[in-house]
Image (cartoon, rainbow over all chains, first blue to last red; front, side, top):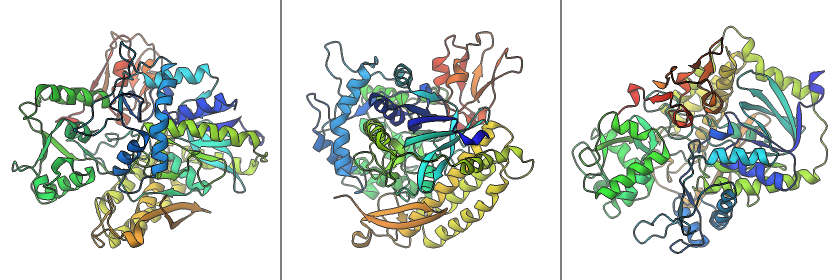
Length: 552
Length: 67
C-alpha cells in the first residue's frame, strides 16, 4: 500500500525556505545530514525577505558599531521587557559570521576599500545596521541550497505532523499546485515558516494587503501545537503604523529621519501622550496614540516631513523602496510630494508579533520543548524583537542542532495508519461539493479577531471570541476546496483559526495591560503577578495555558 | 489591479510563474499565454516586475491601495 513507506526520507527536514530555513538547511548539510526543505512558494522569492534585504542588524567589527552586549541592551528595550538577553547577545555576536558566509555566495557587503558599510546611528545611539545591496538575497540562498545538495520541495505546504506516539516521525504535506500528497520521514525537524499574517481584517479589506508577508499564516504554530511544544507571547500582537491604504511598515524610517506625527487639527499628537520623548517614545505608545486620536474623531493622522532637509526626504524614500519595491508607485501615482504634502497614516492590521516575540519558545540551540523539534526565525518566540538577524543566527544554530540530534536519534517505526489518516484529512476538502471554503473561514476568523481581540480588549469580548472560534471548529469537517490552491487556503485558514484561539486565550489569561496587550478591565501593568510568559500549546487536541518565568 | 502582462513583450520564459510568492500566475490551456490566474492573492511585492527579463509585467496598484 502507498502509505507503508514514506514518499521521502531525510535526516533533517526544514519547513520554510526563508532566511531561517535556508540557513538551517545549509548548516545541517555542512554537518553531513541529508536535508529536505519544504517551501510553500519558491525559495528564490519566498517569505518576509521576498524582495531581499538591504540592511542587517548585528554587532559588527567596525568603527561606530556597538558591542554584542550593547546590541542585546538595545533590542531588550524594543521587546517590551520580554526579551531574552542571552539570545539577543548571541544574535549580535554571530551576525557578522553569517554575513561573511553570505559574502562567499556573492553578496556584496563592503565598499570599494573593503570596509563594511555601517548605517549611521540616530543621535548619540550606536548603529548596529550593516547596509548592503541584497535585492537578490533569496536567489543567492537558492543557489547555495542547490550547490550544497539540499532537496528543495517548492510549492509544498505542510498539512500535519506524522506522529508515532509522542515522537515526530515526519510531516504530511500537499503540493499547492497539484494537491499531491507526500509523507516525508525525518529524524529531526526544523520549523522556519515565519509568523502569522491574515489573522485580522486588513485596513483596506484586501486580504493580502498586509504589513508582513501574507503567505506566512502561522503554519509552524499549528505543527508546534500538534507536537505539544511550548509557545509564548501570542497576546502581544503587533501595533504597527502604516501608510494609509498601503500596508508597508512606515514608522521606523519616518521617525528615523525626524518626521512628526500630526492629527487632523494640525496638532503634534505626542505632545498630548508623551511630551518628553514625543515621536521617540517607545513605538507601541505612538501607535496607541494614533489609535486613540482616531477613536476620538481627530483623525486622519499624518507623518509630517515638510520641515526636513532634502537629504532626509531622499533617505526616507530610498528606505521605503528597499522595504517594498512598489512603494514609490504609491506616492507617484497620486503625485505626493514629501516636501509639500502630509502623508496619511493608519494603524495597520494586527498580527502576531513576528520577528522573535510570538512563537515557539527556544533555547540557545534553537531547541523547542519537544525533543528533535527546532524553531528559528519569525516562528520562534521569546527571543526578543529582532527580525532578520534572529532568523539567520538561530536558523544556522537550528541546522547544527537538528543534524546532531539526527545523528544519534533512534529509529521510529513508520506509523502507516497515521499517514493514511493524514492523507485523508489533508485532501478531503477537494472531494466536497458543499460546505464553506477556506476563504469564508478565514474571513470569519478575521472578523472575530478584529471585533473582540483588537487593540483594546476586555474579558467579555475575549470570551465571545473564544466561543465563536470554538464553534468554527465544527465546520472544519465540512471545508470545501475547488482547486489545489483553494486547498492551500483552507489549510491556511485552519492554521489561522488555531492562532486566533491562541491569541485570544493568551489575552484572556493575562489580566493586566503591558506593552501591546491592552485590557480595559485591567488597565495597569502588574509585575508581581504577570512579569512572566503566558505559555500555550496543545495536548491531545486541546489547548492548555500556563505561565513560565522569564529568562534571567 | 495586481500584475498586468504585456503579451507583446512576454516571451513565455515563466520566471514569474516559477517565482511568485503568491502563486498568482498560471498558464493558458494551450500554454501560449501567461495569465494572472489568482489576482486576489497578490501582495504587490513587485518581484515579478523586477524579475521579468523583458519588462512585460507592470504591477498596477488597485484603487483601494492608492493614497
